[in-house]
Image (cartoon, rainbow, N blue to C red; front, side, top):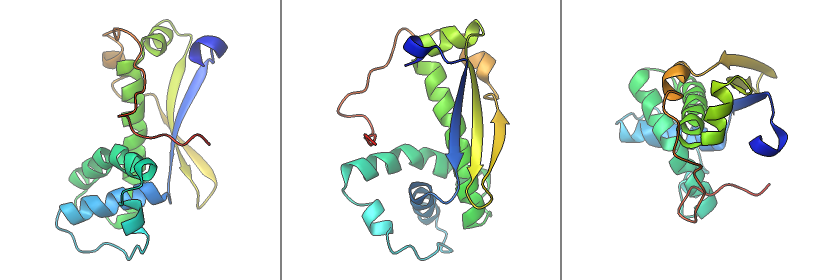
Amino acid sequence: AIEQFSPPVMVVMGNERNDIVATAVALALKSAGRTDIPNMPHIAFLAGEDAETNGLLKAMAPSAEDAVLQAPSASFEELCALTAKINVWRSIEILLTTSKSVVERVRDGRLKIYGAYFQTSTGKVQMLGTHPTQEELIETLPSGEVFRTASDVAVPAE
């Protein structure tokens, strides 16, 4: 799509009140030994064996773990917001370290990538800006494009 449509801007957006984020945070808190985890009756389903959900949860886990490390005494809600924002940066970092076509376009100014955070409770979008280490990330041109395989995290078709 990048090569076909050449968009001048890409926005990578996270959001609050997301079941995958909440479940990842709950599991990260449990792993860290915290007991102040809200009652989430659907956590067993989300952390279960469903390949699509489990893949999304596995992809979110590093961001949740980082959030707990960065703010160990934060509330569950604060950690969910922080996790979503960290995941925005992580997603941009993945783009900038795996996609040659994205990096080439960012380098020459044809593409700007911005992070954003959607506050579902207010309907407002907080623009986070460009990745804090974007310049360092684009110094090395990825060797090619990374193609998804069956072992990658499942992405819903719709």
